[in-house]
Length: 155
Image (cartoon, rainbow, N blue to C red; front, top):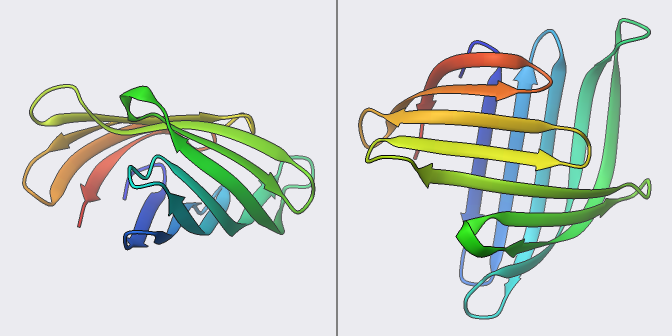
């Protein structure tokens, strides 16, 4: 939870399959939920394929009203050097997206960096300072919600 919105990420997996969901929520700007079910290939698990959905409720700038959109997605993920995750996907409307993401980059013993960029012109940069095993103080800049600071709980 941060001053610019609520951000969440969850994942359940075994040796071959995974299910994950991510969400962003801000009462002024809207919400976005992405869900995926995928399968890893190879014993190193650098490559995976997935099917999923993307549900958006965003404020239309021209009408000052919210619009809802849901699309199916399918794509591939590959872990590049430095644990940068490359995600290539195509949705049911024929829209292509490339996303590059790096999570939990250790800048010091307690300071972590997270960030991503994609071809939908979205990006986020964040820092987390580890207080305890589960709790962290965090700050981020998400280009759709602006700057925010708050707390992160990691399980």
